[in-house]
Amino acid sequence: MSSASLSPVLKQATPVVVDHASGSWIHGTDGRRYLDFTTGIGVTSTGHCHPDVVAAAQEQCAKIIHAQYTTVMHQPLLRLTEKLGEHLPDGIDSVFYANSGSEAVEAAVRLARMATRRQYIVTVQRGFHGRTVAAASLTSAGTKFSAGFGPLMAGVATTPFPDALRLGLSEDEAVDYALKEFDYLLGTRIHPDELAAVLIEPVLGDGGYLAVPPAYLAGLRERTRRHGALLVLDEVQAGVGRTGRFWGHQHTDGLVPDVIITAKGIASGFPISAIAAPEAIMAKAWPGSQGGTYGGNAVAAAAGVATLEVIEREGLVENARVRGAQLLDGLRAGLDGVDEICDIRGTGLMLAVEFGDPTANAGSPDSAEAVRLAGAVQRACIDEDLLTLTCGPIGAIVRIIPPLTVTADEVATGTERFIRAVERVVGG
Image (cartoon, rainbow, N blue to C red; front, side, top):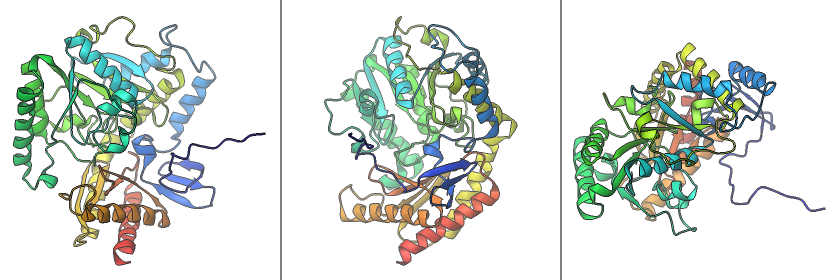
């Protein structure tokens, strides 16, 4: 009899095998209790196994598990649309559901091209939008996401991110530079009349947990309007309270995009994603271009309703802001003077500690040492019973993603454990 195993390409960031989990804590089969500051890469927004989310999923499983929503409609999806609509900007009132962030990104790109009858999508350097072929074609957070299976999707161009740290500029100077480069792209490579959309994360995810400066987002909004293109915001990781606002783009006052993409934290771990747009734009999608067997699954939708209710009732958006500030202040105070760290940053409960010289080119000795340090710290965190992840174009950043339910005591504990992990690596 033959046996099977997981693909050897799947590499775990930690050696942990989970027995059970609750709130901010994972209990491993090794008998250890880990403080989980990964949340399934920002997915378990209400913590592991929140009782209200569990109850909603259990109740729905006893009613109907799979109700294919282009065949028969089900109540959880109608309720989720109503609840989600309470948080969408005015005028964005039409929603399409899929399963994953990548699917939602591709649906948004398809919609943008159909609605504008134009072909080009401009993305921003260091953006991450998924691993499927089209989504990977839009991704520049690292070559590992798009290498080895080309050719990639055509009709994509990338414009510089206003990365003040890497460029050695002030934020205002970096924004000015990046917007000029965007204008230059439209003057040298893409005719404005062929620009369908600009796609950007309001806070970069895998690209390094960098918040997009409000002036840059406002500049893109003005330019897309001027050229008749759409502004599409990938809120897969930054949305649903993660940044201390319900949507990451709400840190830019008055900004209203044309399309919002959401997934990850919207259902506390159940696979569901969505795009939202004004009905006038959504109606321009061609018949048959939206659908999918599992999209808008009934159990996932019920979990999504419960998740949004928990976020509202427990004040988790504000908790993300307050606990994020506590964690950021604690890390900066505790790691002040560590020369190997070039930046400690955060927006709500999206925090990053970057190692090495941010201006070093990938593959240089300086960058290799930064990657080594970040990996060593992430592994040292495990020894401290703290789970974190690395990210960034070369992997020189440790990202910290607690659940929105994280308490002040848990933040204090996590801060202490992270500082000890850094001290162990740097001191060693």
